[in-house]
Each structure stands twice: as structure tokens, then as C-alpha cells.
Length: 226
Image (cartoon, rainbow, N blue to C red; front, side, top):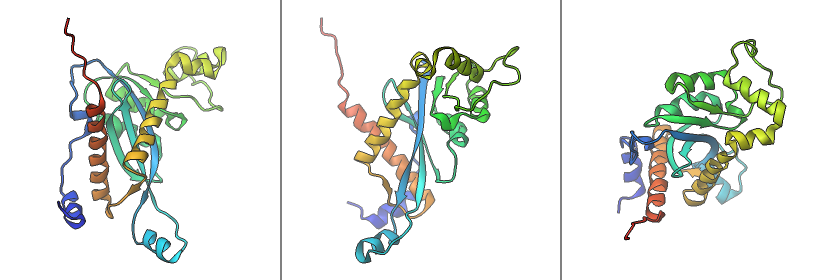
């Protein structure tokens, strides 16, 4: 079995295919993409000092942004960034990894920005963007004559309430991506062990494929016999 040093060196050059291109039929039905993000701690000498000497250190983080297909619970897209990168800026890169058509893009309030709607529309025209508007959100200048998707969300929330909008829009399904993040931290952990960003990206990519493979192995296969 390779030692840690060998694996670390291999991670610098290993080419891991995007998760959206593995085991997916591009001609299948359009996907409902659910996205979210979480923080992953960095391992290093600071952690060793904390354990050995009780030295107080400020733990560094990286942000993991990922998207799943709720129909299969597979992770179909993932990126790793610094903790200062906002979620909305990752909408485009996440969509670029998805193979096939996207029926809807759902995220939390952090994605309530015009550039998110623009990124989705540019890549998948006609795709629904299911993002809750902020409490202080106001309709666009063209809401009366040419309403946007966001204007429609605001109108339905005003008429029926936010909870009714969540149920009607399917936004409640976003809990599934939160469950995926919880599964990541239970199975993979909440730390990155590599010490360079390029190798950390490989570490994340391998973890994505491992979790997806676990889903395939535990999913029952039904065969009609009569």
C-alpha cells in the first residue's frame, strides 16, 4: 500500500474527471440541481502544536461548494475555494461541471444575486432558478412590464407567504444537499489533509467519487421476474 508521501506526490498530477461526467447519461431527463457550501478545516503543523502543547491557533478553512442530483443523491459538481469566496460567484463554475440539461437550480439566500440568474440563463436557457429572495428584496424596475423569475418569487411570497412559496417551488428539497454535506463530514471528515491547494482540490475530487461509489453499492437493483 502506498505511503502518505507517495499519495501526496501523486495528488499533484492526478487528473480526476468531473463527477458530472461519470456514470451519467447525458441524454437523460434534465436534472434538478441543488447547491450548497460548507467549510473544511486545514490540517498542518498548527494542529500538531495545538494537540501537543495546547497552543491556541486560528484554524484556517477552505470552502467546499457542491451540487447534487436529488433524483440519485449523487454529487454532480464540486469546487474548492478560499473561505472568502462568496457562494454566488461559484454558480457558473458549478454549472460548468454538470453534464446534460438542468431543469432547475436551487440554493439558499446566498445565491440571491442577479449574476446567479444570469449564469444559469446563459448556460441553460429556460431553467428555473429557485432561490429565496432576501427579506429586504424589492421588485425590479421592469416588474410590471417584463417580470423576471425573481419578481415572480417576490409576488408569490407576497400573496401566499414564504412557507407556501417554499412548498410550491420545491425549495424544501434543498434539505437533501444539506444531508449530503452531513454525510460528507460523517464519512470523509471535516478536514483537508493535503498541504497545497492543488492537492486539496484532488483530495476533494477523490472524496466526491468515493461517496458517489458508496451510493451505487448500497442502492438496490430491482429486476422484474414475472
